[in-house]
Length: 168
Image (cartoon, rainbow, N blue to C red; front, top):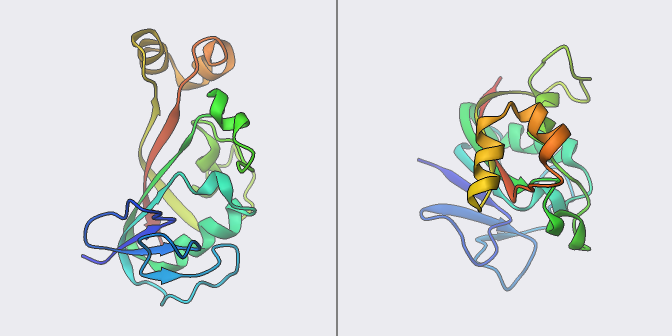
């Protein structure tokens, strides 16, 4: 299986090709993640990890398009980002974007969301991640929209987990 770990840092996934812009990372390929296209072949990866990197990049839409380009048809993409309610989402001065349970709907073709790109992903799984018991209860037992609108600022979640399938 060909695996790509985008923004791998010092924790590159096992058996993955690491991609990062930091020279002191575990990256196999060092390049500027903000310049497109990346020096990778199209349709090359069955699995792409993008863990805690999207919030740091200038253009989420272009990055998702590039992930789509380098992924095989029906490839799987794992994305982890901070939830907008977590204090670190705003505290970290390198964070440029904030994510909700519904952010990646913009890449599904769902007519309820504006389409900023022609690339499509199918959301296979998504979770609001929380650490304490009350947060876990609030984020898992309530409808995500109700949790995010009514309770997320009082009972913040730390992150979001998405599993996507590439549609080509």
